[in-house]
Image (tube, rainbow, N blue to C red):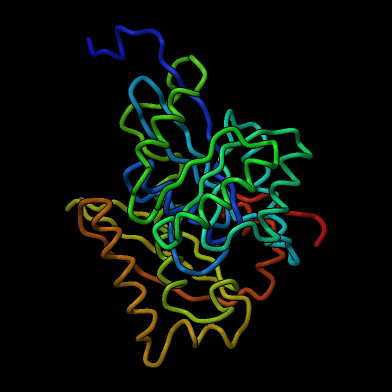
Length: 306
């Protein structure tokens, strides 16, 4: 028997990662789990729905919920994203607020603090990106946050470099409630591979496309066929909200879509460990941002009002 099997004092609980857009939540999640679970781009609002990943630390199973960035929404999709973020935090055993230390306490961070107070929830604070800030500035920011009265511990780390991540994971593991593990030891995420594959393609679109276009498209895995030779045939649809966006995604002579497909295929092959045949199609669906089915595909509840 392993130590886990002989010791009944196992722990298991949920930790919600909340923060303003581009605070580094998804980068931190991948570091905490030790694998790429959430897509990461330099653009804000990359994460659209809750992403759930699982980490093991000693006798604890920690189920991390990476939520979309919390900000003041102005469109239906944005409202769905913010609703998903608060929903992810609502039932968590522990909430962790990630703050971009270089930006400090922005209006979005203030909005989250107000929300935590409204729901009478305490949290830990992570000051992320400490590698680009002087110590005096960090200490001043930490003091300001500690005086808010709702934070228990303040951790300083660099999610990108991994500095301080192990210490955070160990601290959270001790705080999880006693109980049996909910998932197999080798499971890293709850999302099916079809969904992760669509997210990887969307990540490449975010990285390749400029300005507002990435926010006006979504990706869905239409079919997934495992072949006898061990390879996988994947067909995905990229939905764009305007007719004039389609040629932009395709590029001259189809070069842009080919590049995006090659980037996504390479990463999928690395994750799956075998050959991938990826086929991308671009379709115009002008009202996809108002289509409840598209929201369900993204794992979001459809807001009735804008």
